[in-house]
Amino acid sequence: MSEIIWIIIALVTLVAGYAIAMAVSKNMAKSRANTIVDGARREAEMLKEKKLLEAKEQEMQLLNDAEKVANQKMQKIQTTEARLKQRELQLNQQQSDLAKRKNELDALKVNVDNQQQELDLKSAEVEKLQKDAQETLERISGLSAEEAKEKLIESLKDEAKSAAAGYINDIMDDAKMTANKEAKRIVIQSIQRVATETAVENSVTVFHIENDEIKGRIIGREGRNIRALEAATGIEIIVDDTPEAIVLSGFDPVRREIARLALHQLVADGRIHPARIEEVVAKVRRQVEEEIIETGKRTAIDLGIHGLHPELIRMVGKMKYRSSYGQNLLQHSRETANLCAVMASELGLNPKKARRAGLLHDIGKVPDDEPELPHAILGMKLAEKFKEKPEICNAIGAHHDEVEQTSLLAPIVQVCDAISGARPGARREIVEAYIKRLNDLEQLALSYPGVIKTYAIQAGRELRVIVGAEKISDVETEQLSAEIAKKIQDEMTYPGQVKITVIRETRAVSFAK
View 1 (cartoon, rainbow, N blue to C red):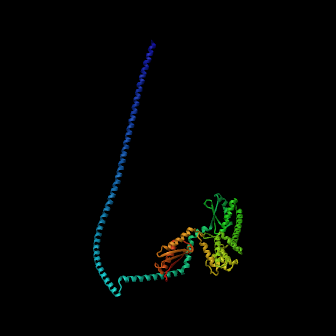
View 2: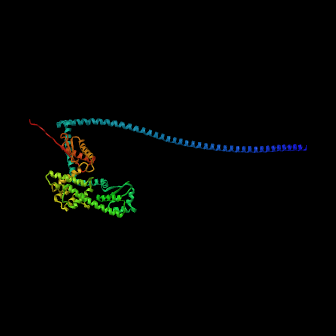
């Protein structure tokens, strides 16, 4: 029984402790909840105050921005109003000025009208006086006004034509006196304009290589190889960024050929060093010299020329490496020699001498030194030096009229030289361009009134113009010739000079039956 009581007491105690614990826990939870609620309420109040402050700041900022925009717009409006007021003042001033000028113009118009009336009256009086005077003159002279006018015009025309012809003759005489000086000036200007292009064409040889690695071997360590090559050949070697090419620059074509052949052998052999370079250049120089002599001998044999001095034979061989106006000099000399032989045979002269003179006429272009003489004079002196006959020497020296022609061979050589140079395609000129130049010459002259026919002859060196006798007078033919010459100078490009000949012919044909 006592155990039950104790159990009951324990249960009661346990229940009472639990109730007390629950009560205490409930109070603590309630106090904690109150604390959290209070904290949340305070945070909410603080957040509310913060948001209210931010809203007030934004409101103030918006108000300030709006005031600024409003002030700016107000300033623009005030500026625009001031500008409009100023413009209005200007317009008012201009309007008043216009009104004032209109009044002045009206007054001037009235004045001009009055003056015009006075002028009309005076003009009528003058016309009456002129008519009276004209009638008096016609009565005295026995000619009408139109007849007198025609006679006066004819006399003035004749006087003007005579004066113009005299003026032209004076100009031509003056031009003849100053022609030599003017010609030298024109030649100098031409040389200045084309010197660069011509120098590049005639002083440069391009040596092609398989790849750019060879350029480094040609240059060598610190440039030793290229310096040795330039010293041995006398030619400047230009190694630049041009792909697979080396430029050889020099005025001596023989030296350029030696440098080209030496480079070819060195590159093919692969051994490139100063000692080897000197050896190869010396060997190539001997080969080229032998080839020059062989070329000269072969040319003399082909043309049937015998007894030439060895030095002359060597000069003939050097022509192979020389060009004149893009034409190979040796080929040009061979052509001239053959033409001279044919022409001499037709004229009953010695063809062998003519062929010899034709071959040697340009040897003055290939001297070993560079004397200050024209090539014709130099060639004559060289021929005299090597015991050529006087008539051949004279033909060489006179083929450009440098000396007087004393033999019949001289004009033959001169003509054949011109024929070889004038051949279409011989000197950088293709056939189509040559024909076009001749057609252009003829069409240019045909464009003038009174011209019936035109003929371009002597490879375009002369232009024959035939005019109608009834359309152009003798005085006008001189004017026409000068005008055509001037137009050709201004509009066309041509070698040498073009002679313009205007032909006027009157024929009277009758038949006796």
